[in-house]
Image 1 (cartoon, one colour):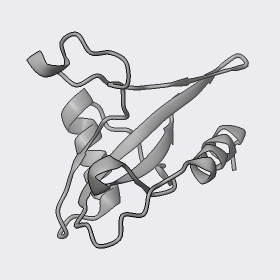
Image 2 (spheres, rainbow, N blue to C red; image 1 turned 30 degrees about the vertical axis):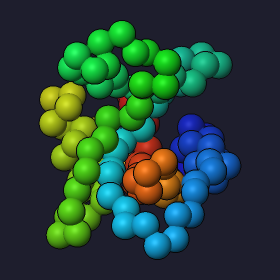
Image 3 (tube, helix red, strand yellow; image 1 turned 45 degrees about the vertical axis):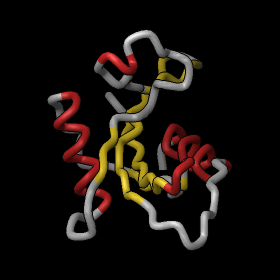
Length: 116
């Protein structure tokens, strides 16, 4: 396994999720695109658009992701959302990361992709 994938898996394992038992959750999936530049790790983040987010940068950056329903697999949803938001395919090799529950019981399925 490439070192950059091992690093992303380690980061994924250290992520903290919340368990909100009894609360119906929404499902979201996305891709964390990353690359190495010398000794630096660079990640691709996106900022939501629209007037609500116009002057809000702190805490607004995220991986490209979106909601999906029970008939779509998380991996397929992550790939679809990446293509919809950025107009490019993240590639074939997507590594699943730890599923995280955010505030308001939103469950996020993330997949890592190493950019060339």
